[in-house]
Length: 73
Image (tube, rainbow, N blue to C red):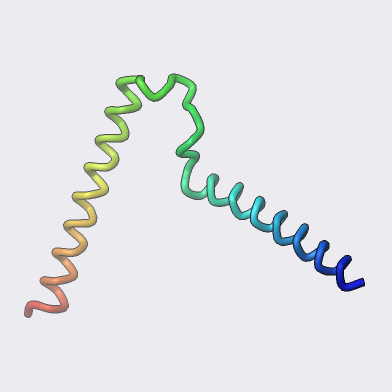
């Protein structure tokens, strides 16, 4: 009977891991999934570069604001 319980726990754990993997792809974006236009589309590449650049600028600004507001008075 314990062998059956163990097998059920393993099956449930695998199902849970598969569910978490599917949900994380939805949340974080499908990095491995090919886009409709492919990875060589110049507009897609430019959009990624612009988005990442804006992200870096925002993070730098937030760090600057945190330091100047709370640590340097």
